[in-house]
Length: 199
Length: 199
Image (cartoon, rainbow over all chains, first blue to last red; front, top):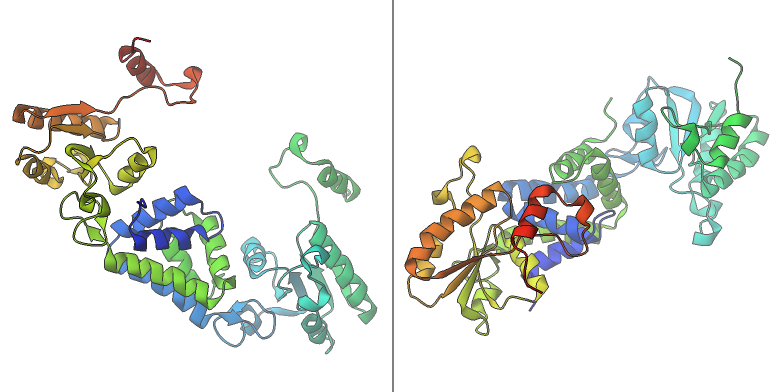
């Protein structure tokens, strides 16, 4: 005999499909939902459906957007001359939180990864080049992840964009602030030494 | 400007209400749902709603049930003479997994906790006593949690049920199997010593 009634088993199955949710977490979530009032469960289900119904990709930068273009692309206050290139929409959130960047973004929707069959054609690189054509953009900051795929993508973009006479920069690699030298891996520490600055 | 479009912010808010889901996990889940296809999102939302629509409490033992009585109460193969008393439906799942118990259950839906305003009247204790009245049950195993509330509830039930001439037992406290003596707290170790058995 199964441990759970069929609707509970189905909910557990769906919850376990979510990233970082194992059987134990799924059970905790399911029992929470079972104990919650109907209103709370409806709000959760409705929020899931609403996000799928109303959110699509911004036609300019490929961030998630509720309208034709995202809030950042629609903001007239932002600097059109600098475009920060990221892999995923969540990276925009991370950069926005710093409050250090007032330019535009471009989401590649991934990184070059031959092993996963992802080449430049699978990414929003053609759309990036199209955005650079009018000549408004003077710098692109490549903020792909500092891993093999992100570095490959950065190199590819640099080779593609530099000939257009646009400045191409890469976010710095080094020790995280508050980090511990002792626990830094040798590649990161090597990069930090290489990119040392005059004080 | 907010970091997220309104529907995403709403989904994040609902996800963060779930137990064990902080802002980082909520973001990971939300971005997963955004990337998933519409079908997967619909299945998740539908599973949440379906569980609320179709699951209620078993009229006999107060476990979660799809029908009038739960699968365990409806199973003619199980032993009517022994009732295992637990706090929550999830405790039934834990005990069923052991495969050691073939009797019936009774879910109190909580434990006595004066600080939270939960007395015996707030629990399914009257319903338990009603179940014992016909005289079929010869033993109740009290499997409430081995914490203050669970122990208080166990003592209360023992005092209530013993005079009815029914055997009342309590699940053993002691060191968890595979545990380490060194890291056991002194109360658990004390209990383990007190409840030592002849080999």
